[in-house]
Image (cartoon, rainbow, N blue to C red; front, side, top):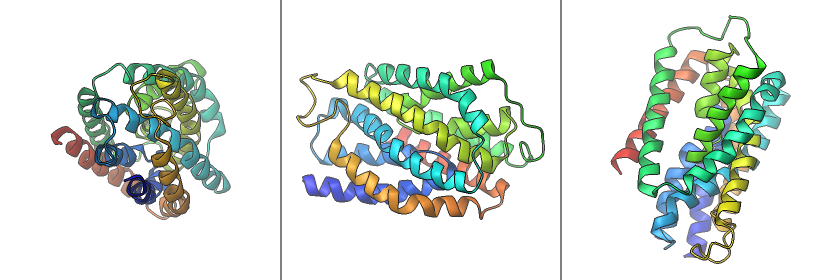
Length: 268
């Protein structure tokens, strides 16, 4: 069973890497739903599977976003000023989100995740017919960016995602950063978000007594390593695709993808 979890996690990582590079997210929108299935079949405690999926997802996002950010920076697609402005709020929010997640019932957390995906996906689709953020001036202010970053960090850590589902729209629609630069900057912001959130999940589950032996708190090491292997292979492919697709198509594709994932989580 252990080897099945490893190989299945590698396959999940291959798909998540494409999504991470293409949309500037950590791949959590693929990783969390996949881990819910994989960890269930691996026989892990059902009451804590959602939290383990979220914590493990955040841990993998650290590595995934490092790779994506390196590739995006080489293409001059990271607005480092935006990263600096958003990161303090993201760090605080991500820690808070981890503490909230381990206290919520797993089934409720899954439904909230699905609703969240649908709301963000709809927003991206409705805005995709407007050239927002492509030609307008960048609007970056420190305090509003910290506050928005706090919201992004809390929600993203709560759901085990890299923050791209919120930070890409925020950077593009609120701060006026062009979509490709928003995707690249989101990858960089997601590194700090994932470090803070994953640390929170390790701390919250350390020496708990009810989690499997060998776990790093709520993080499942075998799933973590499997996903990392897959994402390291395919994240560069996703980055190349992001620089090939037209911006409007990129936004709309992102939105429809979130609708599909969110709907499946709610009805499952």
